[in-house]
Every structure is written in C-alpha cells, then in structure tokens.
Length: 340
Image (cartoon, rainbow, N blue to C red; front, side):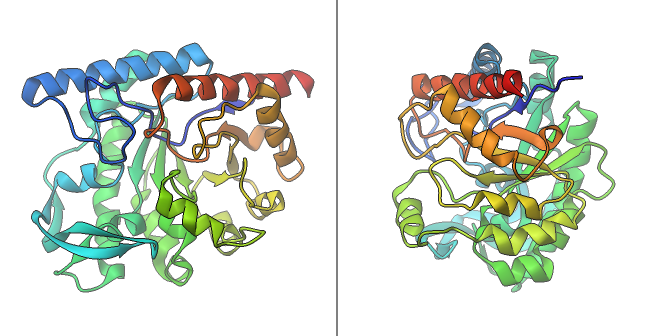
C-alpha cells in the first residue's frame, strides 16, 4: 500500500495581532483575565483551521496559549521566582535576564491539559503537543537552590513526566520535547541529557519526539550559525545517543542549512522530522523545493520513517507568510508521495 508522507510543524505559529505583540519571541499579551483566556482559545481554533486548510496531517496548537515555549511551563511551577532575575548566558550565544530557582521545583496541577482537551476537540487528525526539554529549561534559569545543572534537570524531568501522563489521558498522540540545548552542551547530553529526556517519558503511552534545531531566525542565532563553518555537524555527537534511546522521533534542520543529510543515517529505526521549511526567511518555498529536500532525506531513511517538518517555530513570521509555507510543506510532501 502506497504511503503518504506525513507533515507537521516544529511547534509555534504566529499569534493574531489582537492577542499579542507580533513578530516577537516574547510578545506581550494585549488582553487579560477571562478575555485573554477566550482570545487564546479563539487563536488556537484559527491556527488549527489554518493547518488543516493547508493540508498538514499532524496538528499542533501553534503554542497560541504560551508567551514563550520554555517559560510558560516554568511559570506554572513552584520554586521559581520570576520577580528576582539574574543575567545569564543562554546557550553560550546571548545574555538574558532570567528567573531564579529558589526552592524545590513542584507542579501543583497540570499546566496544559485544558489546552490539549481543546486541541483534541478541534480535529480528528493526530495531534502533537510540545514541551520544553529538561536541558533547555535549566539553560533558561539561574539556579540558586539545587546548585547543579544535572540535579535541576532531573527534577524537571520528573515534573515533565507528571505533566505528560495527564496530556496523554487528555488525548494527545505525540509529545515533543524541544531541546535546542542539545546542539550546544555535548558533554552534558552524553553524561545525563538523554537520560533526563528518557526520565520525562517514563511509562508514557504515546509517541515521543525531540526537536533539536539551530534556533529561530533571530540575530543571535544567525550570527552563531554564520560561525559554524561549511558543515554543521553538531548532530553527529547527539544522534548516536538518541538512536539508542526510547525516543521515537527526532527532528533536524535541513533546508538552507549546512547540515550534511547523511547524518540521518545515524538515527536507525527512528522517525525523522526533516526540516524542509526555512524559518529564517520570509521567502516562500515551492512544493518542488520541499519535495527535493525530502527526497534527499530518503537516501538515508525509509519513507515509513519520513515526516516533513519546519526547521523551527514560525511565531515571529507574518501569518500570511507562515500559512503559505504550511501549504508549501503539505503540497511538497504530497508531490513526492505521488512520485514515489
């Protein structure tokens, strides 16, 4: 039986201008209270409709209810003081004032179960929900309590596991952890990073994924990528570890990057989310360009393991550009599916 290539996005989509500041990673909300709650739900309905209309087959919430892909989850935990901040180096690339860990991390109640229930009600297609991974979470905080990146990561992994189990009960099909820090802290990834990720999925009954990208198309990330040389081989240090892990799916950045496509061969028997949409430019890919990227990936994986995806999130883009890119992704995957 012929297989159609599935498509999805890495996570975020642009928020409506009536909901939040647009074009920003940390766009401020324009409403509050019950009005904000309703607006977030309305925005989710819009982005789900946009994905379905574009032909995307695995649907996300577009992170419409979250101000930021990491901090929104942390804000709902105890043990972190968002009023006291210190400046730290984020992923060895740029400085940012971040909240402080001042006590034991605890999760009082589910953070996103309400969002997953709404997402589940909006489509019969498979749904994916994204969460920050333990290593990326610790890289977005100043730790004044555990005094150990590893200990803090293990605690976050335990808390994430509690959250994931509730999201699965609410109907999620795929849980994806965002771990851009995996492309930076290679010794930690080897020593305990993958282990903490596996702790986060312990006894979880759904498909699991990890998204490892080279970041949004912001200036700090672009400068970093320009310094990486002719080939970006960071994945070479991480993929062999993930190949042996219990994670089901792994994403990588492909289009307009310098990632050697043959690195996919390091991920035997894993589903591969191939980034075929560039989020660092507003230029819209053609279906043929998308199909060509996915076809290159098929030299190193099988069609049953191939998923068309975006390089990273699209929250900073204009909505019309993001929607055009979604359609190009779906059309390109459909084009290649017909040709194979």
